[in-house]
Amino acid sequence: MKTVSSLPLVALVGRSNVGKSTLFNKLVEKSVALVLPEAGTTRDRLEAEVSWHAANFTLVDTGGLDPAKTDIYKEAIIKQSLYAQGAAQVIVFVVDATVGLQAVERDIAKKLRQLGKTVIIAANKCDNGKVRQNASAFHALNWPLVAVSAKNGSGTGDLLDAITSSLGLKPQANTTDIAFTLTLLGKPNVGKSSLLNSLYGEERMIVSPIPHTTRDSQAVLVKHQDIIYRVIDTAGIRRYSHQGEAVEELSIGKSRQAIHQADVVGLVIDISKKLTSQDKRLAEEIVSVNKGIFIVANKWDLIPAKDSATIERYHHYIDQTFPFLTWAPIIFVSALDSLRTKKILELAGDIFRHMNWRATPEELKEFIKTIAQKRRPTTGKGIRRPSLISLEQISDNPPHFILTIPNKTQLAETYRRFMVNTLRGQFNLEGVPLKLTVITKVAK
Image 1: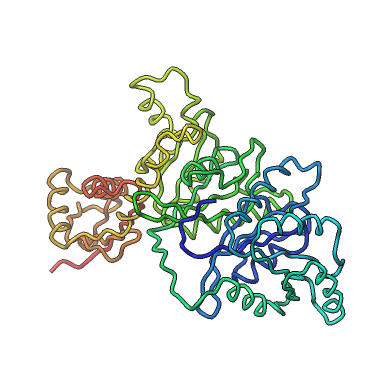
Image 2: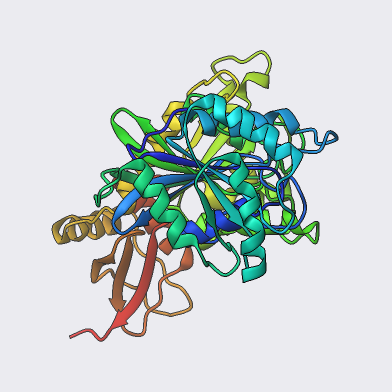
């Protein structure tokens, strides 16, 4: 298993419904993993950093090692868990103290022992003294045992002490320098997880043609050209407002949270299929929160008989579908063939830098002088034609400008849009949601 972070890995493993994801959330002190009573909720491995007394490590949540025989993801879930076990320095074997030692857990223990790694048993659901007494049955596995309650947090400090002690950790700062966060968003089955696997360089996410294979929003560190990126894969959003199963509703909620966590969002579309109103609604949602944005036209390998005009033709089609997003760059990729997938990171990096760009007063003064000569300002509802007094940038991320015009005049909305587009073109701000506020000033 590849990892960008230099921090040691600790894997939570065990059978289904023993509370691994609840314990994961408690230890990382965030509601990261989806938690539901149905077995098989966790499929991919989920990673997050844990800091305990200034000692840091990466914790990995995994799916149950006893998925139902009817679970179509059975082999993939187990494969993801085995990846985590292989990379981990310490394995936390999570068990349910309320039901005692199960036969399947003896089988799991036998396989863990063959790895020759440090194993700690976390006897979960010890919510009271009686259950804690029952946890002693797990001493039969001959590993250190810590009674915990992921529900109320009792014993988690002891577990963290045991983990950091086993790792031989001393207080240290996290040396992972992350450039920015990129979120991949789109409908189900447009290839977001395949894209992440291509960026990561191995099968980091389970990929399936079945909608909503990905459930958790997965934040993964990817290194490219000595730069570290945090890339978030999200569950596909089937409809803008969909009343479905609880797991799907939670997954979609996590996807929307990932938009707000992002510095830049890549809207992933399946270019081999007709774009839909849902693609448009997702684009509108990204624009509404003023995030840097670009369009990832995936599955380019499925487009037949491509020639020099094919990209231009599809570019025009996308612009027609998203007329409000013609300022967002488009990259045509194939996750299957890893065609141009690394360029996704480079493009996102360019947009992120431009989100934080600031113009000098001299540049803006020259800009309004030039634009007024190129095209005279047009009036809105007012009678007098406005003039452009000044242009000032008041913030970045995204860049926000204040345009001052004379009192008792108005600027036509078409001219305001013209100014924004010209700003974007002149200063190379493609993919950046510029804000231009118009105010009036009494002429002296």
